[in-house]
Length: 501
Image 1: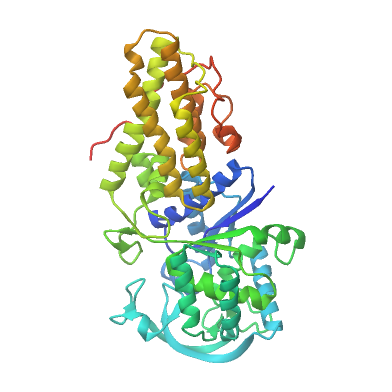
Image 2 (image 1 turned 180 degrees about the vertical axis):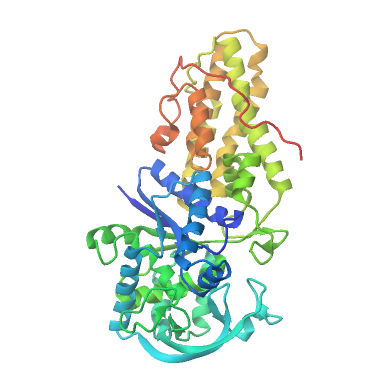
């Protein structure tokens, strides 16, 4: 059995969950569900980032201790992901004792290996990014990501000798050409390395809200270095060597393009410095924009995933996020866009196919589904669709996988339009058409279940099938001809009632 370890970035708790966060979460969840469906042993990690000056300031502004502030805020992320049917296996919080131990051991090992030194850092600092900025990275004196002013800070820090890893990083990228995908993001990371690496600050003395540095308790670790270690904490780094050895080679970090430098340059170098392998896979997606702008608290353009789900339904939101945007490129969210995708793909295609087939089975077959034809024209379509869908999910291309799956829906609807079984008398010809349509629906339900788990479970039930689609395995259970003749088919209410724009 193969292992698949997928992680999301951990989210700052001074913010609230928005649809940009949900975009990352739904991709990670769908990948985890697909790999479970494929028979892999899966571990899916997400969590919250709860240290740093930004958090301390937010707690102070609200007049509460930092511990109370992060406890309340973390719960909002737990609730948001539960509401989106996210199936994470662990939710890590960086204030947990297990994480403090892992951070101190990991960064302590880097120090013991001679890759830190004490110095003074003076530079322009963005509190929202928790990062120092060069003048060239600013736009009109503002942070290019958050659009807010930076501050000039100066303090004694310990530095990580990142510059010592320039050649090793370049060699790692050459030896592992698929470690960072898509290729455009790999090239971006390479450009950062080839542009020259400077040693970077890894501790602070200006705040006490963080993980204490074990070799110098007057310092706490800089929040980014603390946060990155969460990927190791959750799989037993320093405490369960056997578990760590099993899971770390299977890691797939899912990240947004704004944190490439941290994950694709700093993090591999840190791992090298600590004596472990760099992460095996980094999957980089673009931003989900609103009116061309990145969502952020400062721009007041955040969209709540909970409210969107209340309006459209959880699975419709999940489908839209996965289907609408090409992985690796930026997408632009709009209510008009999700409404159009809902009506076209879900109401008119999938929902209408199920309703049409169930209605005709009720009127022509006594409500019991006939067997699919072995030589149905849809069989070749289904086999092609299964192969393309399996390949696309395996390459972390959910938009391609869903496009392939919907091809079978389109072809099945076209077959019904051509045969018009609702006009024919009951008999073998009608049974052949409906049996093949039911089989196509069964296969679609399997293939689409990582994107729309609740909807697909309901379709599975209405088709008269036992268990749930996520109890099955692909590609074996997506083979043509497995729909059981005589299963009771239920009509039910429309899955996706059409919406007005």
